Amino acid sequence: MFNYDTRRCIFKPDENVDWCSHYAGPVYVENISPKTLRVFFSGTAKDRVSRIGYFDISSALEPDTVRLSHAPVLDIGQMGCFDENGVAYPWLVQVDGDTVFLYYTGWIKGGIGVFINAVGLAISQDNGKTFKRVSKAPILGRTPD
Image (cartoon, rainbow, N blue to C red; front, side, top):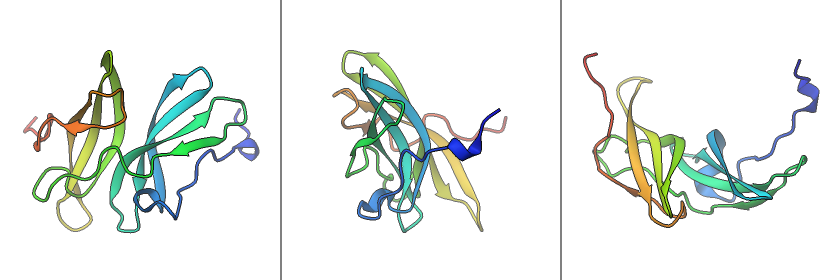
């Protein structure tokens, strides 16, 4: 059974880094070296809009944050796009060499307290340092089914 008294927070939102100053959410973790893990996560700013960035931590039993991306690797989409109100839930797939696919959930406001979600794709050609959307439209949206 898990002992809740032994939990340790490995990352807290940083009030000095606007894009993740208030909340840090859903993550995807990868090894980037034998001693370092890169944690891609959804950070939320004061405006309650989420963006995707990362922090690196040591892979020791008592991990320490090594580095935080000071800008998101994927910001919100353009006005009118399916992800104009936020991006979150990163999932990375190493394709080959330096090509990495970043699947994510984008959303728009859809009424009183409601969001409409869709799946987007951004691709990195530099092993995850920067990402570019493949489309302004989602790769998987709502269907009647």
